[in-house]
Amino acid sequence: MSEPSDTTAPSETTSEAAEGSQSRGLQQALTAERKRRQDLEQRLADIEKTQREAREADAKRRGEFEALYQTASTELEATRAQLADFQAREDGRLKKLTEANTARLAALPESFRALVPDGMTPDLVAEQLTKLESVITQNTPTGGIPPRTGAIAQDKIPTQCLKEAERYGYSDARVYYEKIWKPRMERRR
Image (cartoon, rainbow, N blue to C red):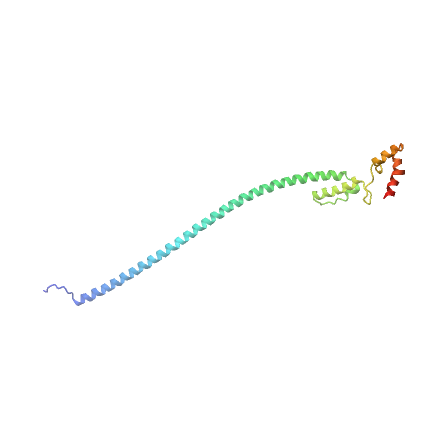
Protein backbone atom coordinates (compact mmCIF):
# COMPACT_ATOMS: atom_id res chain seq x y z
CA MET A 1 0.00 0.00 0.00
CA SER A 2 1.12 3.19 -0.74
CA GLU A 3 1.31 6.25 1.37
CA PRO A 4 -0.83 9.13 0.80
CA SER A 5 0.97 11.94 -0.78
CA ASP A 6 0.35 15.59 -1.05
CA THR A 7 0.68 15.53 -4.70
CA THR A 8 -2.07 14.32 -6.80
CA ALA A 9 -1.76 12.07 -9.71
CA PRO A 10 -1.42 13.67 -13.13
CA SER A 11 -4.76 12.26 -14.34
CA GLU A 12 -6.60 13.78 -11.41
CA THR A 13 -4.92 17.13 -11.93
CA THR A 14 -6.03 17.46 -15.49
CA SER A 15 -9.62 16.59 -14.66
CA GLU A 16 -9.60 19.03 -11.76
CA ALA A 17 -8.00 21.66 -13.95
CA ALA A 18 -10.60 21.01 -16.62
CA GLU A 19 -13.30 21.15 -14.00
CA GLY A 20 -11.83 24.38 -12.51
CA SER A 21 -11.55 26.12 -15.85
CA GLN A 22 -15.06 25.00 -16.72
CA SER A 23 -16.25 26.23 -13.35
CA ARG A 24 -14.44 29.50 -13.79
CA GLY A 25 -15.95 29.91 -17.28
CA LEU A 26 -19.39 29.21 -15.88
CA GLN A 27 -18.69 31.59 -13.04
CA GLN A 28 -17.59 34.30 -15.46
CA ALA A 29 -20.62 33.69 -17.69
CA LEU A 30 -22.88 33.85 -14.64
CA THR A 31 -21.23 37.10 -13.51
CA ALA A 32 -21.51 38.57 -17.00
CA GLU A 33 -25.14 37.46 -17.17
CA ARG A 34 -25.84 39.01 -13.76
CA LYS A 35 -24.14 42.23 -14.84
CA ARG A 36 -26.15 42.34 -18.08
CA ARG A 37 -29.34 41.63 -16.11
CA GLN A 38 -28.50 44.44 -13.66
CA ASP A 39 -27.81 46.80 -16.57
CA LEU A 40 -31.14 45.86 -18.17
CA GLU A 41 -32.93 46.28 -14.82
CA GLN A 42 -31.27 49.69 -14.43
CA ARG A 43 -32.31 50.69 -17.96
CA LEU A 44 -35.85 49.45 -17.28
CA ALA A 45 -35.95 51.42 -14.02
CA ASP A 46 -34.69 54.54 -15.88
CA ILE A 47 -37.31 54.08 -18.61
CA GLU A 48 -40.07 53.56 -16.04
CA LYS A 49 -38.86 56.64 -14.14
CA THR A 50 -38.87 58.71 -17.35
CA GLN A 51 -42.36 57.45 -18.22
CA ARG A 52 -43.61 58.19 -14.70
CA GLU A 53 -42.17 61.72 -14.86
CA ALA A 54 -43.76 62.22 -18.28
CA ARG A 55 -47.13 61.02 -16.93
CA GLU A 56 -46.79 63.35 -13.93
CA ALA A 57 -45.86 66.28 -16.20
CA ASP A 58 -48.78 65.41 -18.47
CA ALA A 59 -51.07 65.25 -15.45
CA LYS A 60 -49.78 68.65 -14.33
CA ARG A 61 -50.38 70.06 -17.80
CA ARG A 62 -53.82 68.51 -17.85
CA GLY A 63 -54.41 70.06 -14.46
CA GLU A 64 -53.36 73.47 -15.80
CA PHE A 65 -55.48 72.98 -18.89
CA GLU A 66 -58.30 71.78 -16.71
CA ALA A 67 -58.00 74.91 -14.58
CA LEU A 68 -57.90 77.04 -17.73
CA TYR A 69 -60.88 75.12 -19.07
CA GLN A 70 -62.79 75.70 -15.84
CA THR A 71 -61.97 79.43 -15.93
CA ALA A 72 -62.93 79.73 -19.60
CA SER A 73 -66.15 77.79 -19.12
CA THR A 74 -67.10 80.00 -16.15
CA GLU A 75 -66.47 83.12 -18.23
CA LEU A 76 -68.40 81.57 -21.12
CA GLU A 77 -71.41 80.87 -18.92
CA ALA A 78 -71.35 84.45 -17.57
CA THR A 79 -71.10 85.81 -21.10
CA ARG A 80 -73.96 83.60 -22.26
CA ALA A 81 -76.10 84.86 -19.38
CA GLN A 82 -75.32 88.47 -20.34
CA LEU A 83 -76.09 87.70 -23.98
CA ALA A 84 -79.44 86.18 -23.04
CA ASP A 85 -80.24 89.26 -20.92
CA PHE A 86 -79.27 91.66 -23.71
CA GLN A 87 -81.21 89.60 -26.25
CA ALA A 88 -84.31 89.71 -24.05
CA ARG A 89 -83.98 93.48 -23.65
CA GLU A 90 -83.45 93.97 -27.38
CA ASP A 91 -86.46 91.80 -28.21
CA GLY A 92 -88.60 93.85 -25.82
CA ARG A 93 -87.32 97.13 -27.28
CA LEU A 94 -87.99 95.98 -30.85
CA LYS A 95 -91.48 94.81 -29.91
CA LYS A 96 -92.34 98.19 -28.36
CA LEU A 97 -90.78 100.04 -31.29
CA THR A 98 -92.73 97.95 -33.79
CA GLU A 99 -95.99 98.70 -31.96
CA ALA A 100 -95.18 102.43 -31.88
CA ASN A 101 -94.24 102.36 -35.57
CA THR A 102 -97.54 100.69 -36.44
CA ALA A 103 -99.47 103.39 -34.58
CA ARG A 104 -97.41 106.18 -36.18
CA LEU A 105 -97.85 104.66 -39.64
CA ALA A 106 -101.63 104.50 -39.15
CA ALA A 107 -101.62 108.22 -38.24
CA LEU A 108 -99.93 109.19 -41.53
CA PRO A 109 -102.03 110.18 -44.53
CA GLU A 110 -102.54 107.37 -47.04
CA SER A 111 -100.32 109.07 -49.62
CA PHE A 112 -97.35 109.04 -47.21
CA ARG A 113 -97.72 105.41 -46.08
CA ALA A 114 -96.38 104.16 -49.39
CA LEU A 115 -93.12 105.99 -48.68
CA VAL A 116 -92.30 103.49 -45.91
CA PRO A 117 -91.11 100.30 -47.66
CA ASP A 118 -91.75 96.83 -46.24
CA GLY A 119 -88.88 94.76 -44.88
CA MET A 120 -87.08 97.56 -43.06
CA THR A 121 -85.85 97.08 -39.51
CA PRO A 122 -87.94 98.77 -36.81
CA ASP A 123 -85.18 101.33 -36.22
CA LEU A 124 -85.09 102.33 -39.89
CA VAL A 125 -88.90 102.46 -40.04
CA ALA A 126 -88.91 104.80 -37.02
CA GLU A 127 -86.32 107.01 -38.69
CA GLN A 128 -88.34 107.11 -41.94
CA LEU A 129 -91.55 107.91 -40.04
CA THR A 130 -89.81 110.77 -38.20
CA LYS A 131 -88.75 112.28 -41.53
CA LEU A 132 -92.25 111.95 -42.98
CA GLU A 133 -93.88 113.43 -39.89
CA SER A 134 -91.53 116.41 -40.00
CA VAL A 135 -92.53 117.03 -43.62
CA ILE A 136 -96.21 116.93 -42.71
CA THR A 137 -95.98 119.12 -39.59
CA GLN A 138 -93.81 121.85 -41.06
CA ASN A 139 -96.44 123.02 -43.57
CA THR A 140 -93.47 124.15 -45.59
CA PRO A 141 -94.29 125.03 -49.18
CA THR A 142 -92.11 123.68 -51.91
CA GLY A 143 -89.00 125.80 -52.02
CA GLY A 144 -88.25 125.57 -48.33
CA ILE A 145 -89.47 129.01 -47.15
CA PRO A 146 -91.76 128.62 -44.15
CA PRO A 147 -94.87 130.81 -44.08
CA ARG A 148 -94.88 133.90 -41.87
CA THR A 149 -96.86 133.57 -38.73
CA GLY A 150 -98.33 136.47 -36.80
CA ALA A 151 -98.27 140.13 -37.80
CA ILE A 152 -95.97 141.33 -40.50
CA ALA A 153 -92.89 142.59 -38.83
CA GLN A 154 -92.47 146.36 -38.81
CA ASP A 155 -89.37 148.37 -38.16
CA LYS A 156 -88.85 149.06 -34.51
CA ILE A 157 -89.27 152.72 -33.66
CA PRO A 158 -86.29 154.02 -31.72
CA THR A 159 -86.95 155.73 -28.36
CA GLN A 160 -85.35 158.95 -29.62
CA CYS A 161 -87.94 159.02 -32.42
CA LEU A 162 -90.78 158.45 -29.93
CA LYS A 163 -89.57 161.42 -27.84
CA GLU A 164 -89.33 163.68 -30.90
CA ALA A 165 -92.81 162.63 -32.14
CA GLU A 166 -94.26 163.52 -28.73
CA ARG A 167 -92.36 166.85 -28.62
CA TYR A 168 -93.63 167.86 -32.09
CA GLY A 169 -97.20 166.83 -31.26
CA TYR A 170 -97.66 163.75 -33.43
CA SER A 171 -100.36 161.49 -32.00
CA ASP A 172 -99.14 158.49 -34.04
CA ALA A 173 -95.40 157.90 -33.64
CA ARG A 174 -95.47 155.49 -36.58
CA VAL A 175 -96.45 158.29 -38.98
CA TYR A 176 -93.63 160.53 -37.67
CA TYR A 177 -91.20 157.64 -38.02
CA GLU A 178 -92.23 156.78 -41.59
CA LYS A 179 -92.51 160.35 -42.91
CA ILE A 180 -89.71 162.19 -41.13
CA TRP A 181 -87.33 160.06 -39.00
CA LYS A 182 -86.61 157.21 -41.43
CA PRO A 183 -85.94 159.44 -44.47
CA ARG A 184 -83.69 161.67 -42.37
CA MET A 185 -81.62 158.66 -41.22
CA GLU A 186 -81.33 157.36 -44.78
CA ARG A 187 -80.01 160.74 -46.00
CA ARG A 188 -77.33 160.72 -43.29
CA ARG A 189 -75.88 157.46 -44.48
